Amino acid sequence: MRVATALGSATTLALFASAFTRPGFAPKAANRWYVIRIAGEPTGWMHDVRTASDTCLSVTTTMRLVFNRLGSSVAMEMTAQSIESMQGRFLSSTVLMRLSNEPTETTASVTGDSLRVRSRAGDHDFVRMLPLSRPVLGPAAIDALTGSNLKRVGDSVSYGSYDPAAASPGVVTRVLRGIDTIDLAGTRRTARRVVERSSATPMAITYWIDSAGTVLRSSYESPFGKTKADLVDSATALAANAGGSFSPEQYARTLVRTRLRLPQARRLVMLRVALTRRDSSLRWPSFDEPGQHVISRAADTIVLEIDRQQVSPGQHRFPVAGTQATREFLEPNAYIQPDEPALHSLARRILGSETDAWRAALALERWVADSMRFDLGVAFAPSVEVYEHRRGTCVAYATLLATLTRSVGIPSRVAFGFGYVNGIFGGHAWTEVLIGKSWLGIDAALLPDSAVDAARFSFTHASLAGGPAELTSSLGGQMYGRIDAQVLAYRVEGESEVRVASGQPPYRIRGDVYSNPSLRLSLRKPRGSTFTELDATWPDMTIAAVALASGDTVELSSADRASLASISGDHAVIVIPNGAEFYVLEARGPHPAKALLEVLPGFKPETR
Image 1: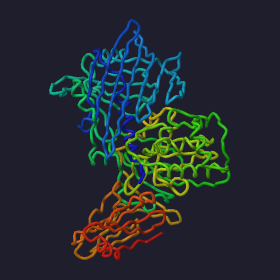
Image 2: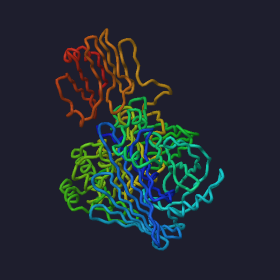
Image 3: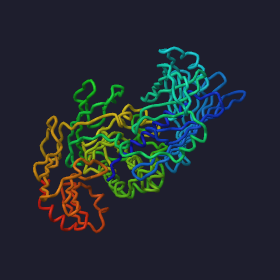
Image 4: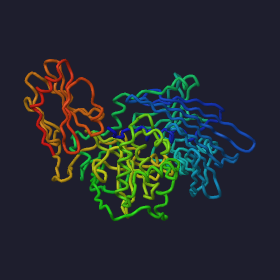
C-alpha cells in the first residue's frame, strides 16, 4: 500500500513553517521561547532572538517540530533570519530548512523594485526574480505599525511583507478582533486578539499580543487539530524537543471517508463526488485541473466530476524544445534536479531506444514504482536524495518521477490533491507530464494501468521552483481535515455507469449473509459465528471479518500486487484475483486452515 496520506503531514509541516516563522511580531526583548502544541500535545519549540547594530536590526527564529505517527517519526528543523534597516525596510532573509537528510537554503534580498530569491540544494543554486508591488516592511517596523494602530476592536493595518516559508512577497492585513484574558503558564494575561491574513498563503492566523506588541500566543487550525504556540521559559519549550505522538483520532482527521467502497479504484474512468465543507471559513480552490470540473455549486457543497483522460501513444516525440510556457517545467530547481548526470543516465538506460513521449513516461513511472519503498519518515526531499535512498512518501515518488521525465526533455510538474484507497480519500501527490498540448497524470505510488484513474482529484499543481511553499500558497491545502465526501456515481473501465442512491448503505447484513453492492460480493458466515470489522478504512484493508466460536478469526480484505509479497507466517491465506486487484481471505487462530475452509464456501465475489 503506497497511498500518500502522508501528504497531510507534509502539508502540515509547511503550514507550520508559514505560521510560526513569520517574524511580524518579534518582540523587542533579545530572547523569547515558545512551546508548540497540536491538540494540546507538545510537538516542538520555537526560539526568537533579536539583535541590533548601528545600521540594521536582525530577527532570528529557530524552530523544531517532531511528529510521531503510524510507527514513523518526522523531524522538521528550520532557522530563519530577517534583516531590516533602521528605517524599517526589509533588506534580506535567509532560511535554512531541513525536511529530510538534505537541507535547503533560501535567501531573499531587495533589488530595486524586485525581490531576488536564491534557493540552494547541495552544490546547486537556483535564482528567481519576483516583482514587488509595494515596499516591504521588516519585523520591527511591523511591530511599531501594529502597536500604534491596533488599539480598538475593528482597527486594521495593511502592509507589504516577505513570507520566508512561502519564499514570496505578499500583502498582509491585520485586524484587532477583541481584548481577551488568556492563561499563560498559570498566569492570567490581558491580550489583544489580532487576526492576520496574507496574500502569500490562504491560512488565517490569530495572535494574542500585549500592549508592547509581544506575541503571547499564536493559533490556527491544522489538519491534525488546533495548533498553538505559547510564550514560555526555555526549559518548558525544550522539554518538547522529542515531539508529540498523533492519536488514531488525530490522524483520522486528515482522511475523508467515502462510506461507499469504490471497486477497482485504479481502473475507474469516471467519478462524481460531492464535497462538503465543515465550516464556512474554508474557501474552495477552483479545481480547474486536467480531467476534472465542477458541475454544480451550493452554499457549502460542490459536485466534482473526474474523468480519466484518453491517451493515444505514438503521436509525440521527445525531447521537447523549451518555450516561455514550458521552460519552468523542464528546468532544474532545488527539489527537481534533472541536470544531475546520474539521473539523466538512469532515465536513458530505462528508455533505451524509445522515442514516444507517452510510452517513455509510463516506462519511467514503472521503474519508480518498482524501485521505491514507502516511508512515512520523509517529509520533503530533493530528488537526488530520494534517488540515493529510494524511499519516501508520495511526494518523493512524484518528485523523482518528475525529475526523470524532465531529464529526457518531457515537461513535468507535481499535482497535489486527494487519492482514494479502501474507503477514504487521503492527501496525495502525483506527477503530470505535458504530452502535446495536454497535461496527463502518471502515478508511481498508486500505479494505474495507463493515465491516472478517476479515483482522485487535485487542487493545485506546481513546478516546485518555490519548494513546499507552492503547496501552502494553494487554497486546497486548507481542505485537509475540513471536508466530507459523498460518492454520487462512478464507472469502471469497460462497464456501465453506477449511480449511488442518496442514503444507500455501504453494505447489508441479512441473516448470515454480508453483501456489498459496490464491490459486488457476498460472504455467508457459519452458524454461531459473528461478523466483525465491517467499517474499517485505510490503513486497515479489511472489508469484513468473521469471528468463529472456535476462537479463530477470518478476515476478508482487498490488496494490490505490491502488498501480496508482505503476507507471511503460519496462518492460512487464500488469494483470489479480481481484475487489477485481489481479494485476500486470511485466517488466524488455533485452527486457521479449518476456519478458512468453513468460511470460504460462503464467499461469492462477482469477479471482473
